[in-house]
Image (cartoon, helix red, strand yellow):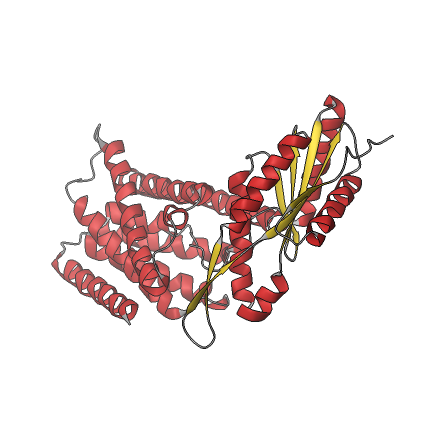
Amino acid sequence: MRVRVVVLVVDTAAVLLSVFALTGSTITASDLLRFGLLASMSVAYLELTRQVERRRRLFTESGATHIDVSSVWTFAGAVVLPPGLAALLAAVVMWHLWMRSWRHVDGVRLHRIIYSTAAVGLTCVIVSMTLSAWHDEITPNLVLLLAAAIVLYRVLNRLLILLALALDSGLPSLSRICGTASANALEFSTLILGAATAVLLVQVPPLAVMVLPAVFLLQHRALLKQLVEAATIDTKTELLNAGAWRQLAQRELGRAERHRSATAVLVVDMDHFKRLNDTYGHLAGDDALKLVGEALSAELRGYDAVGRFGGEEFVALLPAVGASTAAGVAERIRARIEALRVTVELRQGGVETIQVTASIGVAVAVGGVQLDDLLGAADEALYAAKGSGRNVVRQAPGLVAIAA
C-alpha cells in the first residue's frame, strides 16, 4: 500500500511540476531547436539500435537495475533546456523507449515505466533549475559545473528508484544501492556523453550528431559484456558456471605444472538441499545457494577460481595452496556456511529462519595433474564427509598423482 501511495505522489508531483515549469518558462526559438534535435536524435538512435537494446534488456538479471543510454539525451536536455522542456523531452524519450523496445520484453510493466518516466522527469526539472544560472557561456568553471550536474542527476534519479524498491521489497543491500562497478561506469560514461552533447548543442548544434557513433559503441560494449557474463556466470550465485570454471582451472593447473607448485581443489556440497527445496520451495533454495556463493567469495582470494557445478554443488581451485592450508580454508568455509541463516516465507503465512550446512571434500596435487583426477579425489573425500554425518571436511589422503 505504501509503495502505491509513494508512486502516486511521485507521478503526480512530476506532472504538476513539469506543467508548472512548462507554463512558467520563457521558451525561445533556440530552445525549441535544441529540443527538436535531442528528440530527433533519441528517436533515430533507438530506431537504429532497438534490437540491441532489447537484447541488453533480456540479459539484465531479474531485479537488477537496467541502465539504458537514453540519459545521453535526457541529461543533455536538463543542461541546455528550460525545466519544462527538459521534462517534456524526458517524457518523449521514455514513451518512445516503451513503445518501441521495452513493452516487447517479458517482465517489463507499464506502471514501472510510468514511475521511471516520472523519476527522470523530476530529475531533469531539478537539474535544469539548478543550472539556470548557466547562460550558454563557456566559462573556466564549466567542467566543474557539468561534473556537479552529473552527480546531481545520478543521485536524484537513483534515490527516487531506490525509494520505490525499498517500499516494495524492503531496503536493498548496500551492494545493490551502490551498484556494480561496471554499471556505474556505464552510467557515468553515458552522462559524460550527455554533457558533451549539451556543449555541442550550444556551440555548434549540427555537430551534436557526432555523438551518435560514440553512444552506439558504448551500447554495443555493454551488450558484449552482458553476453560474456551470460556465457560464463551462473545467474543464481554470480559465480563461474561449470564450463567457465573448468577452463580457468585448466589454465591454473598448466601454470602449476610449469612452476611445480601446489594446487588444491575444494568440492562443497550443501547438505539436505532437496529436503530444503521440497519443504520450503525453490525460492528458498535459490536464496540458500546465493548465500553459500557469497560465503565462498568472501572466504577465498580474488584470484581463486570459484564456481557452481550444478545443483547444490560448488567447486573452488586454490593456486599455490598446500594440504594444511587447504584444510584450514575448507574448515573456515564450512564454519561460515554453518553460521548462515535463510529467512523463508511459509506457505501458510509467517516466516521461518533455517540453517544451512555443507560437506566439503579437499584434494591437493603438486605439479602437473589432470583436472578430472584432482576433482575425482576431492569427490571421494566429499563422499567420506557425507558418510561421516555431513557438515564436516574430509581431505583426500596424500597428494594426487601427477600427470606422466
